[in-house]
Image 1 (cartoon, rainbow, N blue to C red):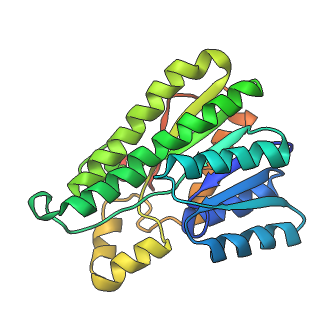
Image 2 (cartoon, rainbow, N blue to C red):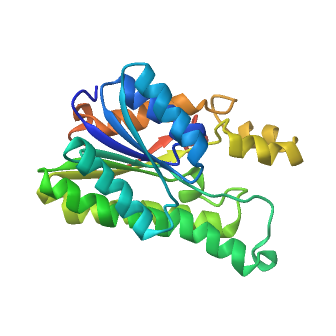
Length: 250
């Protein structure tokens, strides 16, 4: 599905990002992996190369424009171009009421989820323009379309991701760049396990309103991202695609 493509994936050291990194490589893409945790990122890149794929690891935080710039430059310097991007890095908190959230938590939530996507788009789009087009997928959330049990800051941030996605799709559609978002439901990731370890009763609450009555596996989200980055979705842009087990359908 992605043979011959060069793809950048953020938040690649675990969860959805790691699953997408493996899947994109299996589907034929050369992958540029970005995350904050250098050791995990390096091991994943080595795993992909050992399986016959092409991968390069770039340690960095998407909240830093310079770090994102380095990752995009690594794609161009190593593989000659950038064709696709899955901007998946995120940060969430649960259970903090709006008036109880401190400035530091609010800033981190907005910096990773909104500024991080902004930084990625800012640097990825010129690289794609230089090679004649591309496809970008941004990770939003059920919280991007309704007020979920996540913090108010997270809800606001994920709404903003969909807004950025649609604005970028409109602005860069004429030059062959498609931009879409995933409306992701509760997914069994490391971050989710950390949330549930302190409040195990939340799992039933998370799945109660989904039509599938379970959480997603990271690979199920990665499959949707791979499709949106491929030529099989050539007429899809500006969309917020639910991959939520039916959570937003009811």
